[in-house]
Length: 168
Image (cartoon, rainbow, N blue to C red):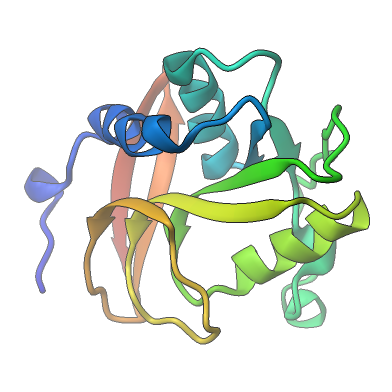
């Protein structure tokens, strides 16, 4: 599949579509947790769109990656902010792109360091295929197949989310 910059979807519209998918499943016990950085931006938007109380949780999985030794410490490690008790809570883990599944696995490891949630579901804007672990999204608005040498990145420019494709 060839993707041009002209064919990339509007990420802001995708956030609204993702909110529409999530809304019917919300309970009073549901809380969002965004993975830095793209997932954090999306989680903040979804919290507003869904009218959820309090801020979303935010996690940085840098220390939990199984390829930490290969990649080293990311220069922008941010503090994890989970200001609520995760025990017996229904969590929706939010990320921008699902690729190999390794970021999701790292996020689950970190979440369980904070307690034992009743359930964890995964919401992403884009599922680009290429899974290396048995992980699948519960909520997703864009599925595409990209070759490994092509990067898909969500960026935040002047308060607006947009997609960028990078070819190696």
